Amino acid sequence: MWHKGLIVKLIKYKFPDNLIKIIQRFLSNRKFQLKINQVLSTVRNIQVGTPQGISLSHTLYNSFNSDFLRNDKVLNCLFADDSAILTQGSNIRFIIKTLQPELDSIEYWCTKWRVVINTEKNKGISFLKRTLQQSAQDLLIHGRRFNLGKSSQISWTYT
Image (cartoon, rainbow, N blue to C red; front, side, top):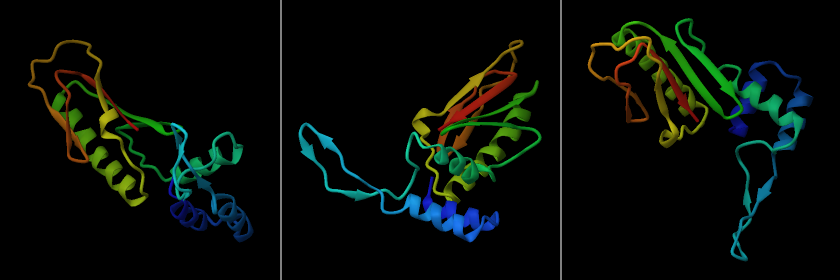
């Protein structure tokens, strides 16, 4: 979660100024250092994310994601930093025409709010009611293609 983006959203949502200042202080001046094989890295500032194990972190993360896309043809499932989008149909062309614009919108939202999609972890999952006699199709996100194969229902997961 991008700290400056969160603050912009809190202002947009009309959070009280004093609360925004408290949250800014909570997130600012945090540092980290890595230790690998007894060797310490230099100390760096943390500019994204929230501390784990703190109840406020969940609330801030939910506030940051509250403007995530909504679509009546696609179900968005968000849990922590994992998510899935789902749709169904009896025609692979309909599924592609439904999911690809949603993926394009998600890619835009993620770029705007500096959320990184790990395309190595993306999965397309098909649930078949019957075998369709159509050729395999691809979805595209961040320039990476994912083949859907023959399916009547698709689940797309990204993190």
